[in-house]
Length: 619
Image (cartoon, rainbow, N blue to C red):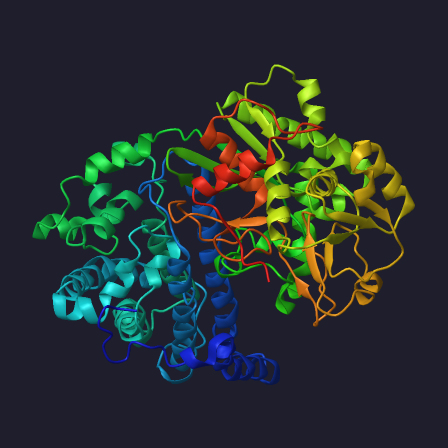
């Protein structure tokens, strides 16, 4: 919100929440009904194309959001090197309101405005008029309106809402209070209203002009320099009629310069161009390569998880991924097609960039879903992708690479040891984060606990937790003989009494791995605490029991650019395996932590606390 919100700040349908799209239903229904029931000569193609055009605007904006987030996570051409936080994502979550407003007026105009219905596909005179009217009245009036909005009275009540985002994303361009957005809409309708009343409006002019506005808005707020310098060398006057992302970025950092819409000529005429515009463009265009200290290697989980990545839908990524939204199933052909294409042609891609003190971090994703890791015929390809990522990180000067989720599987690569044996001279350190994950589990167990039940599939973390508990004198119970025998072989003889084989499920502290069944959960006593040591959380089937999150830690405030959730974890919470890699780099440790190797549990835990990572309120 603005610092002192004025009247008509809220959008008319704000209280409808996700149901706001109902405002378009009557218009869309009437449009389709009219087109299907009228005769060939009476049908209005331009009217029925309004809804597909609105969908195109949604897609166009989403492409820019994903492109911008991808580029700012990896590109050397980033302009403002600061982070975005959850507050900004929440504030900009209503970017589609302006599309609903636009759609409502298009339907009203088509029905009641002379010359706005039964439009021809193409008219050259209408296109020329549109260009002239935009370059003249629209750009000129916008410039002075924008200057007025920076007067303290209007700025405090309206425009400060837009300037809350110093580090911009493409969609920041349309984040304004309702009345301000309405003013812009009226301004942008000058060419279209003129064409309509003069009978020169066409489908191409309408769609082309609004797509141009979306394109330039997104371009100016994308926070990475994308405009080639060669364009200005070929046609020098272009700098007066087309802005660049770095040009408009200065407006969000300096506030009172570079006020023009898309054509900087008005800033030059009235003396409001920022003196550093050219130098910032040159610096951003030349760029500086980003070399992270730490790379966290993750992968996709469910098929729909691709939409919950930071590169996907921003509002989804900013919330824990619990289950797929029902409407995502409507685009299942696209989902399956993306999975097939990435499986065939895909390579590891950068998801995000973060910073903590002097340490820069990137997250890379393997383009494979969780179910593919369980397919034996996929393992060679997955190992090849992981190995390629490790070698790429090594060549890029990365110090630590942490293996997240199933990338450190025992069956896949022996907890990462496979890569170390194949490349023994690696300078970077491979970290699976087991020691910190074990520490988180151990400190999640209530004080005074005398015994725990071990269930689910045992992993490196599970074995280490069991061994550490026996060292503390806590009894570890298992109900499967094969697990009992394997654990017994690993334990020193003097601790054998702390390992018990028992068929009873009455213990109220359960340490659970993957594969915990619903039937087993129902056998647990009321009030049981399910504490996972697995990468994935168990399915919650008991309302009278307490489910802890998978091993994770709250991150310190100093960790920048966190505006997406790591899978199912809450905001500003990271998995222990990922944090393990960060701590490894912060401490400058030289050892690998993979295969059978594990760092000292207490040392890693204390280091994490010293760097500001805190335990999570698990329940």
